[in-house]
Length: 82
Image (cartoon, rainbow, N blue to C red):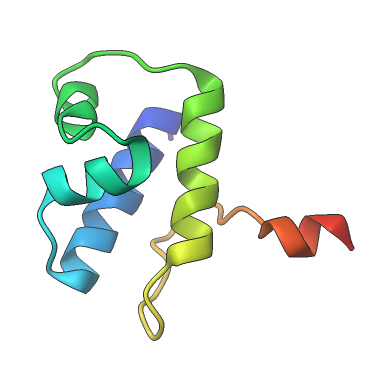
């Protein structure tokens, strides 16, 4: 699975679990309400932005919601420091 596909899979699952709109999530993750829609439309973002976004999702994942498989869940910053 491509990393962009993984990002979109995780963002879709987050929106479904929380009931928030994609634009709201995009604002929270990227500080840009249009970024996820642009990625979905084929625009590119850098690898570091994807890594930061995936870490944001992991650290802010809704309690009780299942992380979507087959997306690998990044370790939290605290876990990585141990």
